[in-house]
Length: 284
Length: 241
Image (cartoon, rainbow over the protein chains, first blue to last red):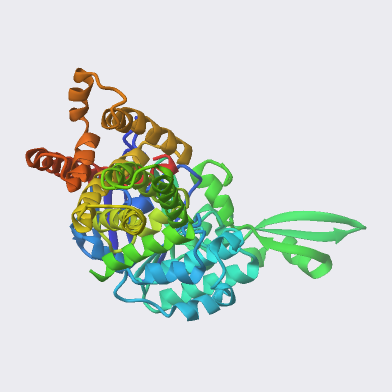
């Protein structure tokens, strides 16, 4: 769907490039996660792909053609879900959506989308009366408004309660099942784990790592298992290698003889990988 | 074309909802109040003068305020990822924001027709208002590019008023009669704007009106190019880019 080669970009007022020679592909029908701490160039990359920024060097191909060769009709195929609210606060949700809907030649069933995200009964309220979570859900509806082929989502579930986050994630999965492609930017590694087919970690304007979540966990994880068990009224913790675990007599003995409290394989979580690969904590 | 009409309708709805239409009508009523209380029967000359103050300031202010609202609420981002062109967006905003000026003119004209004497061709004055409002809407657009917020915009409009409008008014109402000053005032585009509007009263020579129209038209084209060229750069500036 997208092929990005040797992409570089510098903001006019900056001395250094914000994007430093990155190359990656987003395949047709996949959910691709673009991850990394704030300020590493994720949003800039996304803005270049949605043509909010121009003046880059390198190449961005969309469906095999230079992105610059596409006119405004590019946006007929693209849906963008911003992290911040992007609606007219003194208009109702319905008025907002009706305005944007009429700018497209093809549109989704808005009422159905509003019902699914739980905003249908609030469609006649002004956005100023909406809570943060409601605005985020409305942003998502706005992104889906034009039946896009590609969705760009920036923190689509950040600030949502678990129930509504689940609904949004279900819709994203359905979108993918119907052939849609998604570029997801988020700090929430649970979402990444659940949704993304492949992820790229960005650090200092470069792609530090790119792979599937599973492969990354294997690459950065330890092939070990932790066992906590009770022994003479105290808790003991032992670590064993996963290699030839079935032949490990001490491990077998503990499993057979002791009261096991917990047992965990030590594969890394995406949170751990995030910190390792980008070299910073997530909140930075 | 449908998208363009949608954009214009959207602008008009927002002018209403953000109470900018109401503010504009209030200003029009204030002009009618002035017309009512000043002791003249024939309003032919004063209508273009009041329209001049209204159109120049309100055109700058309305375009500026609506654009700053869109920047602050980040709705401009949502618009920029829609299949519309920069020109459609800019022209739709300008057309919608000229409508309050037309409304203001119409209110003043109807009042004067009913209660005073007025000898102006409404349609010619309407054309003049559109040209002058078009020019000043573009000035309003450019001012927002360099204004961080609403306060900044108001300050910028105040500066424009002092530099470009006040000298023209001092000349027009014979408050300053110095010959050099009167000649220098002709450099200002606002003087051309006033001459185009006053041209509808028959008190301005034809060649002066023609030169003023050329000045306003060329000025509008240059301003439009500047607004168009820098649109994306400044419409995203709330994110510090």
